[in-house]
Image 1 (cartoon, rainbow, N blue to C red):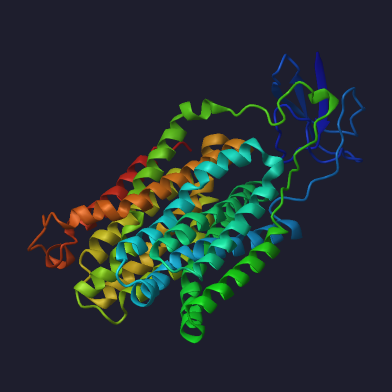
Image 2: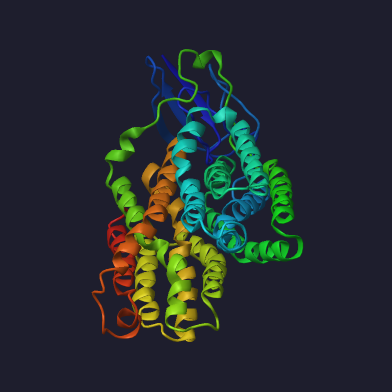
Length: 478
C-alpha cells in the first residue's frame, strides 16, 4: 500500500515511524516536492521525485498538513536559541576552565596537605563533563520527549554540587561535589550543541562557532569574577553566590532551548512502529565516520597540553611578564574570535581543507613558537595562534558530523556524544602521558625550550598528534 504526501520543499527532518512534519501546503503556485512512503511491515522508504510547479496540489488520501515551522538561519526564535545556548556554553564550560583559581585556593587555604586529591577533583570535573556525553547522548536519543526533564535534573544537580562545595570539610568532598556531581551539567548543555543543527542550516558553522566561543568567554571572565568573590567575601560566600547566579542564569536560558522541529505525536498510521524509529548504524561502515573518529582521537590527545603546562613552562624559562596564568587567559580569549572565524570558514570550505589547515597551523605554532619560546613575545604569539586554531577546532565538529550522517537528527546527537567523549579521553590522558614524557630527557642540549627544559618530548608529542590529526583529516570526504 502506498501513501503519497505533498509538502513544500524545505529543511524538514523526518523521524522514521512517525508522521511527516513540515510546513503547510502553499495556497499559491509554488514549487513542491513529492515524496512517497512505501508502508511495508515495520519499515518506511522515502523516494524523492521531481519538482512540480503550478497550483496547489489536489488533496490526497493520507495527506498530513501541519503549521509552518519557524524559519531556519533567521528569525527571533533562531537567534534567541543561539543566545541562550551561548550563555549556557559560557557558564557550563567556563567554570571548569576556571578551576585553576579554585585549585590554588583549595591547596593553599583549605587543604594544603592533600594536593593529589585536589588535582584529581579538578581533572575529573573537565574530563567527566566531556565523557558525560557518552551517557546523555544515547539517553536523549532514546527518550527525546523527556529532554527538558533531563536538562532540569542536570541543572539542579550541578547547582547542588556548587552549593555543597561551599561546605566541604575534607578534600575528598570536593572530589565528590565538583569532580563527580558538577559534570551532570552535561545534561543541561548537550541539547544546546545538538538542537542548533535544526535552527541553523546554511549558517550552521558560524552559529556553532559563536556558541562554542562561549567557552573562551567563560575562561576569560570567570577567573576574574571568582577571584573577586574569593578576595572580598571568602570561600563559602563566594561559592554560594556562584551557585545562585549560575543556577538562575541557566534556568532563564533553559526556557529558550527548544526544538525547531517538534516530535510528532503517534498517529493511527504510525501504530505498530517504534516511536522514534531505528537508528541508522550504517554510518559506522563509512570512511567518513572512521576518519572523523581518528581525527578527534589524535587531536584530543595533544589539545590540552598547552593549557595544562604553559604556566609551568613560563616559570621554568623565567617568563613572568606575562605569567603563565595570563598566557592561558590569552589562549581562551583568542578562541572567542577563533571559534566564530573557524565556523564561518567551515560554511564556505570543504571539511578536509579546514581540518588540515587548522591542525597544521597549530602544530607549527607548537614546534616554532612554543618550542623556541624562551621570550615573552614568542609565548604570547603562541598563545594567540593556539587559541585561534587548536582551541577553536570544536567549531569544525558540525561540518564533520554533517558529512558523516547527513543531518540524521538521532545520529547527530550520538556523533556529537562520541566526539565529546573522545575529547574527554584526551583530557584525562594528557596529564599521565605528558608526565611520563618529562622523564625522558631526550632533547637535552637542543635549542630553545627543547633542550633548556625537559619539555622537548612533550612538545614533539603535542605537535605530532595534532599534525597526525590533520593528515587523517585530509582524506575526509567532500
